[in-house]
Length: 126
Image 1 (tube, helix red, strand yellow):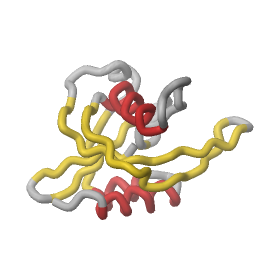
Image 2 (cartoon, rainbow, N blue to C red):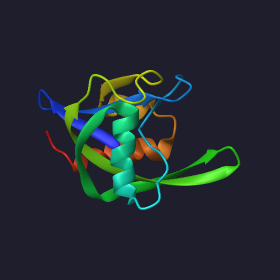
Image 3 (tube, helix red, strand yellow):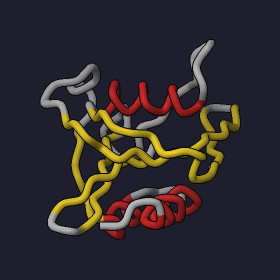
Image 4 (cartoon, rainbow, N blue to C red):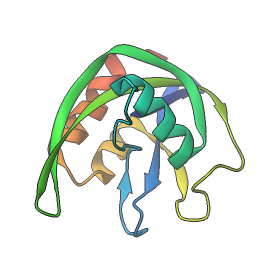
């Protein structure tokens, strides 16, 4: 999920630290049985980042990454954030921070995902 808000007419993206705390990432996770990819993205964003908002469809795009020996493909959605929680499920394991769009894209290690973050600006204009 690319969680976005507008502050002082500028787009900001929320990133969270990875479970190991060393990298900035976007909230993501597995689709639970009975969930759509968009519902999963909404749930994971609440759990990992403490953010609530409106998920924009269709998906912005997809990217693949390696986790152990598996190659996983993630559908990436944009969320217009409407509520920022002070406490959330994973706040003891993850930090959340808002970055301007370009800065967020630079902090993400995966080039394909960084391009999707920049593309998110087309969905939301300040």
